[in-house]
Length: 434
Image 1 (cartoon, helix red, strand yellow):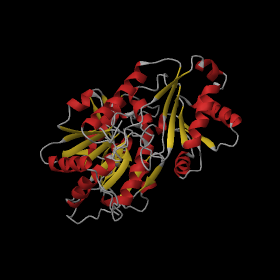
Image 2: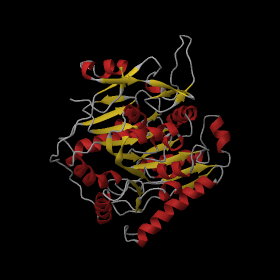
Image 3: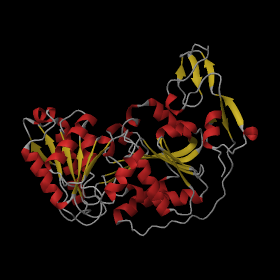
Image 4: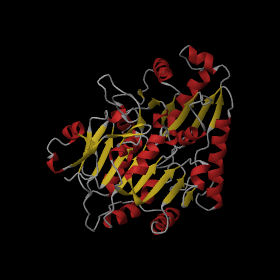
């Protein structure tokens, strides 16, 4: 396996690739002095932070390991890839609307540089990319598919491995490192800081998700990892107006491939909700609703924070002792296992934070958002969370319930957007009925 794309510290080479001989590698100072301070050659940040030992270090990308003014980055020159044949194995079939976008996206690569695929949750954005990925690999292009979310990367990696079984696909993020080379990489955006002027095509999934949307460091990571003449594709179900106006091409798909309308959230008001939650309890009508949902489907229950997550799990388990449930959140060491167990049907109820608002697909689940009026549940988050219901499989009468003590602007906008997508899909003949 050749490693030609990554610019790594000596300690990283020793950890990730202990067998590699760095005698043939090129090296450069990890930080260089500039007028404003010290410029980090990994992330492009400028630092004035100084340690007692009288050297400087970068604070911006510290999470990837310390870059300082005494260290070096090592890398191997990029080699030209051969043109070759690539095997795509996928038993599914694109719908006419998906196929149209897939063809247009492929054709437009030669006449534009930036693209937005705006498609509702569960519309099959990943599958739409398959023809482009196959062609790009055959044309000896290097590809990175990246997202701010670990769960999104894990899901994409599994799908790509199934669709392109002969390809050596790498998965890089803070919790896992499956290294197969630097030609086809799936990674969190932070991992792109280790590449420079390298990828011919970068696909940014969930472009509006935290932390990418408001973090200049991550925008620099994508910019610097892409070749100057490379192309970039943004994927989102909830893009903002700025992105829509500032790409060369954008494509809109308001319907899912199975031709069913998006589940429209139902509001369940509880005027004393916060009082109950402060005592670690739920009102009787909410407990009853959860029981009704569990009679038809498994349930994803979203909470605004981790402390409430634990309280609700304990309370629901006390009220319904036979229900198989668990919790999952970002720092959970068993997070990946729990998600897979939920897919396998080992849990009836999974309580989670917004960490699972995107990028995960479960069959036969209804969705509940507890305290939907909380500030963490903005419009985009609520649309994404609602999109976890009825994504695949046979119709299971999945429901989406927003539980709140007030009707916020975010709740209203989320419902209006979902209804608007359904209306547009019906108008274009992409769904059978509302």
